[in-house]
Length: 83
View (cartoon, rainbow, N blue to C red):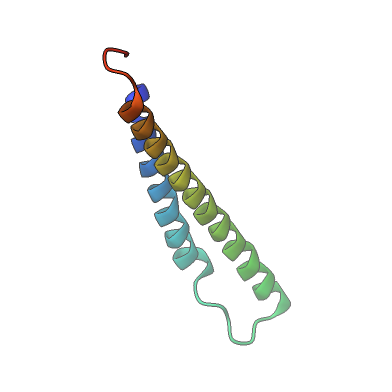
């Protein structure tokens, strides 16, 4: 199972990134032209939630890629016969 952690983190990051974009389209959408204060507050709240989901996705994706690169480097420079 340890070998699949980087791939799982990368897939989770991509899923969160896509989910953030979908949430943004479905709930925040295009900003209103001349919103009331309540509409502006609702839009800002929904857009903030979507941005948070996307940033978590980016962070998870980058962490998974870095972990994968580190594991590849460690495997490449490991002496033969060591598991």
